[in-house]
Image (cartoon, rainbow, N blue to C red):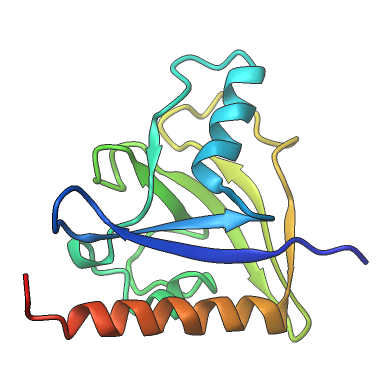
Length: 153
């Protein structure tokens, strides 16, 4: 079975702002992939609507758990994998069902909860090798932990 590759890119918003987490699938930012999908599907509004998640702003719980679909917030059966470009995840989130097994982590059943009529069936699913996925989560946790310990801000 062919699987996708994931990594979580982290960068500070603006000049010394909070850390923003953007999943990358097969080397491409998820923000770019969803923009291209929505524009090609003729969805309005579309393009530059999504941004990464900002762990510092929200009580997602550990990002490791969040990206395994185990977020501590009561968000229903789906997990926000992107937020709005404004930085507020609840404003314009991209939600996905995250299913983890011993061998695979799958992201599917994407939705934009503020536009229930939008059809995302052709977006994804993305299937990640569990070993590679866990490694990406460890790298993400290390960045977030080291950033939290940075007192230079």
